[in-house]
Each structure stands twice: as structure tokens, then as C-alpha cells.
Length: 174
Ligand code: IMP
Ligand code: MG
Image (cartoon, rainbow, N blue to C red):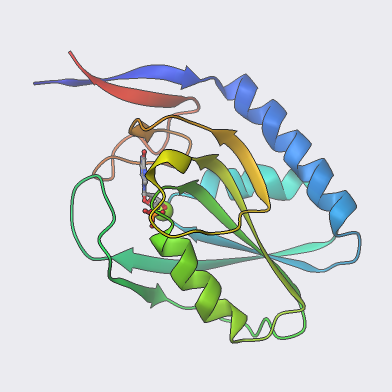
């Protein structure tokens, strides 16, 4: 059965919301630098746009996380596959994520990064599926709360496809 992407959030809706998030973050954290830490690979596009919407001086870093298991859900086991190249001690850190689903990934990452003693540690996610939460995680900045649907585009993939779409789409079976 073929999977067809159906537009769920347009590029314009995303851009408008990202701009608002950038303004909020800039006013909450006026003193830079903010270390924007994108979680590979899904956050790359959101990070590119969000970083340009933040007025406070920022630095861009990436971290790789893998969760064992395949398909559309995260399994319980998480590990760092590509660590940061820099120390974050004493710096403002904003984790930039594409989507919070079970919360397993971010709970793990928050624990790892908190041990490195940043000055502040917060999360910005473009999308949040609160209905699927297994671990409570405090997310300071949420772009859109969405229902329990599998979405792709704007960085998000299904088996590595669709990351390059400008819109966020729901995959439907045609
Ligand atoms: P969590 O640990 O369950 O919160 O997993 C979050 C990760 O699962 C995200 O970083 C995405 O990589 C992936 N994910 C969860 N939901 C979706 C979705 O609807 N589309 C694409 N990836 C998703
Ligand atoms: Mg991800």
C-alpha cells in the first residue's frame, strides 16, 4: 500500500510560529550565548529557522541520540551516538527537538546534560504529542500540540524519507 503525505501544517504556519518562539526565547534569555543543541537528524530544519528567529547571541551544536528499536515508536533504551564537541558548563543551553512523543529521549538527554552543569537547561520542541507521554518532561517552548498521528516533513522522517518537505504532513495510506 502506498503512503501519501497529506499537508497538516503549512510552511507558512510553521514559519509564523517559529518566529513567535524565537521572540519568546530572546526575551526570556537576553544574555548570550545560548547553546542551541539540535538533536540529529530531525531537528536540523527547525534549528536552522529557530536560530535565525532568536536575537540573543547563540552557538549551534548537535547531538546524536539513538533509541533501539525500529518503526514508528521509540523503545525504552536510549544512548548518545554523537556527543557534543564542546563543554556546556556555565552556559545557557536550549535543547532543540523536532517532536516530543513518549518523552523517553528528552528525559534521558536532560539527565545527561544536567550533569554537565549548564547555567540553564531548557527544551524547545516544534511539535508535542502529549497523549503519548510515558515520561513526564518539562518542555519550556512548544510550537504546536498535535494529536496522536505520525507526521513527516520539515526534518521529520519515516524511515529516512520526507525530511526535506517544507510542510508537515500526515502519512496516509492511499
Ligand atoms: P520519544 O523519545 O518517544 O519522545 O521520541 C521522540 C522521537 O521519536 C523524535 O525525536 C522523533 O525522532 C521520533 N518521532 C516521534 N513521533 C514521530 C512522528 O510522528 N514522526 C516522525 N518521528 C517521530
Ligand atoms: Mg528525533
